[in-house]
Image 1: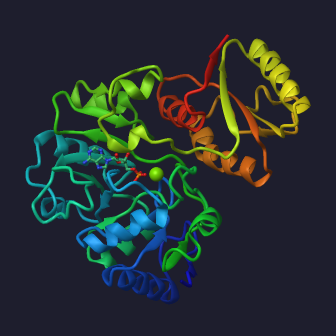
Image 2: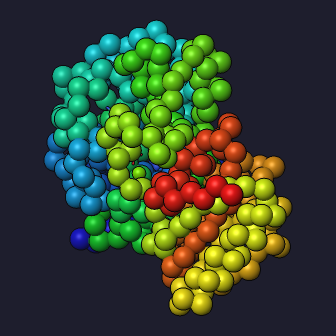
Length: 354
Ligand code: AMP
Ligand code: MG
């Protein structure tokens, strides 16, 4: 299959005629059952018609994703929520008022019209109203309901640039809309509103602190914060290995000098054993490290920067064929919770505490 590529200028407040036409054609592709990758404020999504079971099956196929891992339905108007959800609790409206459009997904009871293929057979549905102008326009032209997981092959880090979508999806989908680098870089926060108190199933840019300030209290799925937890994850996708680079990754937690000494020692031993070694450091610690490839993920002073760079750094290690990766750990507070969650998954939960 030939994959068409169209470009939209990033950060441009208005679309020109050519861009508008391109997005209309992309919308037609989705309406006819095809698949289009597009930028959102979190990561690139792989979109298909959420109300067409064949489109959902094609999404699973293109990603190589297990079909019990449900999809998030993206809308472009708040009122469209009522078309796919059977009951909208007051808390959902409060959350929508504060965080929509934006990087937050709500789990709500499903309306009968949503095909089971889209929800992995569940009687709940995940809904998000993104803020990215390209995503919103495309959803509108697609008919209003776009199922869109991240536009990567299953198990790989989510794409934050169109180049990575091309790498994974060229030849497998109909079209890619290149809108430049995404702003946030981590997938949306997922909040389950079918339980009391509401429960965070995946941490993201909207933090637990922010949600608590609106709802009073939220729970967090134990499997997110404790890698040793034996609890069965509530979001089906959480049981799968995710966001992983090709190399074996280990996270090291402790006082910065000790962490650097430990990582350098391990990396040196790995190098002697024939591995190509990589280290993820920060502006504050970069000078301490020694390996084949040392990458800076950002400054510890700026968590948003680290979130935006993280998946690109993981992919760069793949590009450079690094086989053994070590990373510093990050605080579990605020956005740090989402960063640590993705890092732990990328590392298959290999965490060394010094
Ligand atoms: P992705 O599309 O890769 O961003 O992943 C979507 C995530 O949303 C997966 O981890 C799913 O398990 C989760 N999800 C989607 N729908 C539901 C649902 N109805 N209940 C719980 N989790 C869901
Ligand atoms: Mg994903």
